[in-house]
Image (tube, rainbow, N blue to C red; front, top):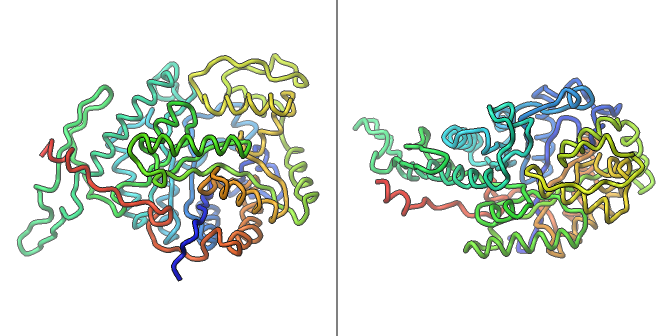
Length: 444
């Protein structure tokens, strides 16, 4: 039977222990397995069996000594891990985070084309610009470049990678063993890009991949980020705290896509949801309280200070969040945190606990039905095309979501029971991009 009802998309935001900052201290966490491939293989196979659209790995390019002391920071490099997971899965998408601030377009284009070939068409790139001085100082910068400059560089970076992915036409490979001709060289193109940040001759040294290009994902919600997403992104990971805010963001992304001549359906909006699931709401709240018990206030304050760009240690914990200056760092998340603290009249100490479970993403402790109701409400009321599922405890939380929430969504006709295809683009209902023939003819 052909599925005609709109269905939501589910991405699993994969971490070693969970999205709660104290998840590694929970007795049920397998902390010693955090760097073992077998640990992630279990999660990947469970998510694929449950028919998740994709797995997603975030990444940052720095760790502080305090962060290393109090919490599991960083981890396995995303493309490395997802390449390994490609070998033990068949259908689930594989989305890796790579920064445009600290890489070169040729290397990134080659790595994602390789992942797309290795996985038979399941690669996705979460495009970030990075936002902290600590990261910049690991790459010969004293400070992170300005917000606008980072996005200007990201646009050119993506322009170059797209040209490189298109530098081999789909039918370039002939593989005529008798004639000794592997590829039609008239269908392999130098790109001769020269811009403000990059000069790249091309072509890429790997043929066009199964999806043509990886699925392009973006997570910024600032004005620059929304503009970038409207022009380029095919999926947007976002953090919203209320249905109304999520609806506004959803409409803004769709409107920006339309303004760039794209179909609103060509970009999927996936807010982060951080669930804790119990048989009763009381049980779920007890689980949440237990996780909060393991938090370290000094570490939590350090994390928040780094995110908003202000040292909050000089302010009383029982007092309100002070006014925050404009930042060149994480603009949209800083704004969300300010609005959350003001809307709920939170002290700094209360704010730390509100952020502990998901760093500003929506947290919910409830029954499977309550969680399914929330997802359905946001989905049906044009606040989301699906969700970035972020279990606060990875092992237990993923098992509970798969066992108890997904069947409810399937019964309501909101989520698939089988994959309709094998490509990540097929899971998300996205078209395979055509080669930019105008660009190719200019450099023939």
